[in-house]
Length: 496
Image (cartoon, rainbow, N blue to C red; front, side, top):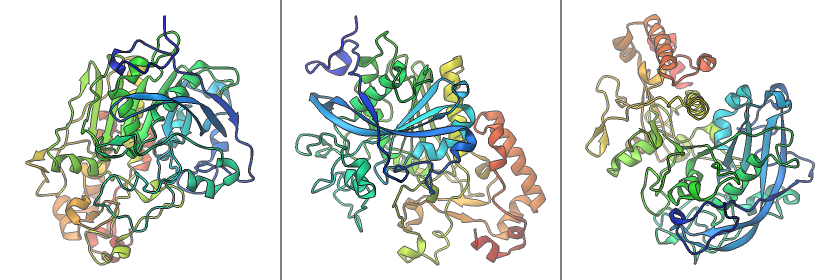
């Protein structure tokens, strides 16, 4: 029989299976404007929901959840109230049975996974639920103080519940979660993560998968719940797996609350605490996927951290995406502003002025499709080599100046630029930058634009066959270089 209490005495790996407490929801009253992070609001998360046959609703989610330390110790239960933002097909017949859940990032309440996968999700009939994990601003906010050498200038104003209340007080004044920086530490510093994060995520998954008549997906039947968590908040779900919560917290019939976990662009241990790349207490029914951009790949290589190995039992996959940055302008959250090259005195530095602007979301779409296929059909996800290491660095092909190995989208397989990271360029930007090839370099590689275009088209087909590009997304991937670049029209190149 499954227990329905939270144990305070045993470690998670020793605990019998338990059903989390079922949280409650209530609609958020209208305030006269769309919610924060709404897909109806102009910005990075906008989508034409009506055209796609989707609706968006916001609810308060509230209950009591355990406060857990970074070491996995459960101290006590505490009340909380947060919010969820739901997007789902209007027509139940369009729903594919799967809901994707993701905590909003703490900078601007950004739905990072929604930005990357929204077209795919709506095309395939998924439901999506974003949820808030934040706190009132303490005197020393751990989100900006986990690295004692980092001095933000100025401190971002959009990191916490205070930001949400300034944005829309009528909606977000009630939100609150327990936090005490003296009792919850990570790596000797105040823990940047809400102590109730794991319990809130588990309770949300339970609510969605329980198919209650008055639930946030009422009228739809949920068969599967996937986590798709990006950037630093993905560490919440790594904690969840590493501490054995997947095995501990279950549905009343013993099924897992979550059927698959995708985490992207995060370094577990990068904000304090232990450095791990694979959960230590992973069970056979876990499917865990980690996706790195060039930034995280460089971070690990410089520190001598070996990439994890793929496995079919337990089900683990690790991908290093070349030609993909940690963040793009299209990924920014509400009220988030990041410096460009001109802002840091590097406006004339050729290493700093060209941002990655390729459609990296197509790679995430393909991997999400592959993960879903593994869950529903038992077909293992595609494997990929890691980037070739060279000591505590990464090997660059002397001809193209790009990394060797990893997942290689068409713009890397047939490059028109060298894709760098800030560790190499020292531009001082949150964005990674690329160095476009000049006309002489392009002609030396390809001869002319027609040859380059043919090779690029062939690389797209290779990506499709390899499982890293969906045919439906192929038109989004277009040649990076243009005919003018082969003629040496530098004005054209500088304008991109």
